[in-house]
Image (cartoon, rainbow over the protein chains, first blue to last red):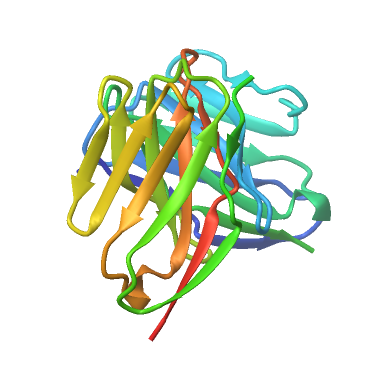
Length: 114
Length: 111
């Protein structure tokens, strides 16, 4: 089936640095990808919709300058957390649309900012 | 705005028991409903997808139903096993193609 590969699975960074998370669709082309954030024991919250070749669409309350999204090809979308702070520590997951067959998700990235 | 609710938040059952996980949604105009499994610290694995025109889908010991008129979906797990222990999330796709998730039900199957 359609697989989305997400890397890294875990990252620890110092406060003030930037971290890039990659999501690749391995055996299909993903025109649209989605980035979610998940807090402990909470549901997934959509951060932004990433469209290949155009600017991402951010959900209300998500800082676009803080969370930079690039979708330069049909198989790669990246999320860069800029000037990370401890409150950015969270679990980030990407997904791709398999319209009309639902969505497939990456394995997630645990970000810890110290 | 679509809201998805999963109650209870946690469930513990003995091995071998058949069980039903519930999911309710407020907007019946969903495009499809998808059930996922999430193991601790991991991503989401798709279990079953029900299109809006369908009533149910089956895969192995899993059966998911969808009743748009009542705003409900259920995931039935037959003959539960300890390996079924995980968090189960339901999510509805709206007309805007965005998924709205419930908070999930954490299932523990005791040997």
